[in-house]
Structure formats: structure tokens, C-alpha cells
Image (tube, helix red, strand yellow):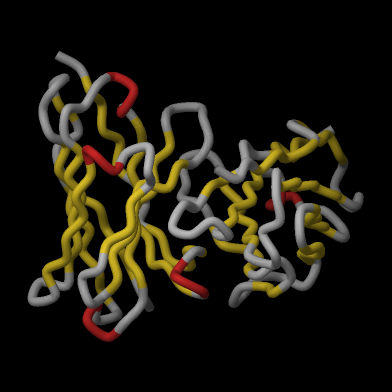
Amino acid sequence: QVQLQESGPGLVKPSETLSLTCTVSGYSISSGYYWGWIRQPPGKGLEWIGSIYHSGSTYYNPSLKSRVTISVDTSKNQFSLKLSSVTAADTAVYYCARGVGATGYYFDYWGQGTLVTVSS
Amino acid sequence: EIVLTQSPATLSLSPGERATLSCRASQSVSSYLAWYQQKPGQAPRLLIYDASNRATGIPARFSGSGSGTDFTLTISSLEPEDFAVYYCQQRSNWPTWTFGQGTKVEIK
């Protein structure tokens, strides 16, 4: 059974960098698929942040591209998200997920999500 | 950017009734559309991919249809556990994937 688990600070100060890691179990990232990050502000809808292919190719939401970096560490079976220059608008539950299908657009396994609050 | 508009925003129904949820795209997304169910405090759950294919383990009462710009998620007979928020998602203008704003199915 594929499982994903997000980890990282729950509180980040404005203008700093948000860093999260997703640890995957039950499947080797290096074997394939896309691996993505999606966020959800409190009480609002879902926003795709970006995805990384198992080979390391990355794809970002154009609205966030200038601030986002996604990387993969196959030796630890993890992938990570960095979002720079955060503001209160970046407060959200952040999910990691496995992307499948054509260019990995739909997500079949999700982490439980982690709330990140941006506040001083 | 392709915008997905879901309607209605809220659907009030009783258990056993049929639910019909709509997702309309601002331009054609071919059949690259997925549906998710989300319950409070939980991650989204994939229901349907490529417009009409049920994901693994999804009950047959869930079905998806449509192509191009108009899509429908149908729940043939609502079970108590089906009351949740439903989102559609597209991938047509790769690599920008967007979600609809959601439809809440609530108990009448």
C-alpha cells in the first residue's frame, strides 16, 4: 500500500521560505510516476503547486513558479517543496500526492496534509 | 488558463436520492478530467479519471461522463458517507492543472 506523509514546520514567518518534505512508503519513487504538491487555504478550494517526475523533471504552476522549487531524493524515497518569500496568502494545508495518468495530472494517493501558517 | 466552473455550489439531497454534479470548462479539455471527493479534515480521494473511469475501489454508484467542455459526476443513490465536497480537475493546458471551486453535497 502506497503511503505519503508530509513533514515540516507548521509556522513560517512572512518573507521566509516554507520547506516541506514528503516521505513515500510502499513504492519506490525512482520506479516511476509524478510526485506533486497541492495546497488548500482554510475553507477554500484546491490549488496545484507543482510536480516532479521520478527522473527529476519539474513542472510548476505559472502563478507560483518564481517562488517554488521541488526536488527529489530517491535515496531517502522523499521529495520536497520550497516556497520562498511567503505571505499570509500562503497559509494553507499542504498535501503531497502521487500523480498518474497522462503527464501525471490526476492524483491517486495523497498524504494526510499539513497545515502551514504564515505569521510573525 | 482554463477555468473550471462547478455547479451547483451546494446540493441538498436525502440519502437514496440521485446526485448530479456539473463541471464546465472555459475551453475544451478533451477527456482529461478527474473528480475527487473530500470530507472535512481529510485529503481528497480520487473517484474518476479521464472523465469516465472509476478509480480503484470506487463503488459503482459513482459515474462520470462528458468530454470537451461539459462534464457530469453522477451518484446514483446517495449513501450517508457520500455527503462531502466534490472537486473536478483538468490537465488540458499542461503543465497547468486546475481544480474547480467545488460542489458541496449536504443532507437535506
